Image 1 (cartoon, rainbow, N blue to C red):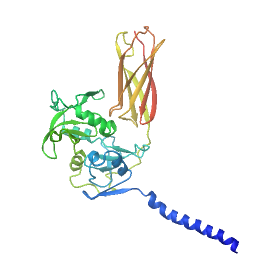
Image 2: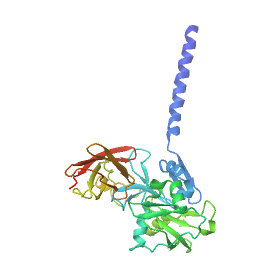
Image 3: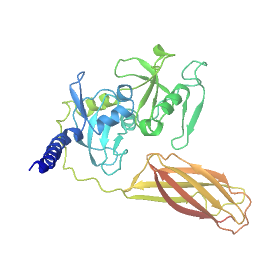
Image 4: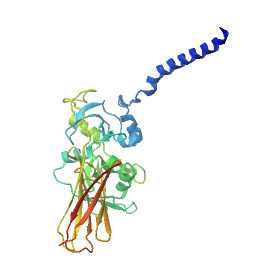
Length: 337
């Protein structure tokens, strides 16, 4: 009997350890949540993980309500959303992480609701300070420049994924929160404001409280309760990406430039944020040009001269579109006269 006692004790130890670990597992794998005392609202993963990884309070603001289902004004589909002071988080289960959480296009929605025509841009230096960075970058997809401290902020705070493409130039707008007027520029997902009172500090550029403004405008009677849905919530369709490409002139003269335009769609909707590279195949050489990022219509383009090519020779252009680690290919062509 004694010779079996150690084995018996070992077996009992394994059983107990297995039970303890089994009981502990649910707690270890449960979704993380955090309640914000300032608003009394709770944020849980994956929204909490996104909030922490993408600027937290300064970039997203405090949560204003619980999760609920809302019909997207962008594509008309239902998504689980949660509003924050500066953003609307959306769950996109049709995407693989980390793109299963995306920001709503609050800047685009707010801008379209407020302005039927584009406000006049501030002439000259909109920040009235030559000591500030003066670099500008032209976004060909929307035709607007982003300059100086706004460009620095855009690049340092998530760029296209967090802020989106610029929708306006810089103009003076009265802030609906405090009634003061600031140099302002709208982006697809944000409203940039330049605060002279914080010049020279990291708070000189601040984001408008678009989440709060949109929430109050859409739900004056209060935030829908958690889980509420204005309509049945079918599962979003699986991703169905399609890419196409065209040329501006398929029979150009030998001195004419040619523009290649590629379009990436998902279930018929334009995909923003894609880029493209093109390779132009000539008789003895290849040329190239690149374009993007795409706007909300999914389009991106690049233009170049057609170079030395014999009349009647068909130049085939291979188009490679990149989007969130995925690659899509197509081709187009032109034949010079």
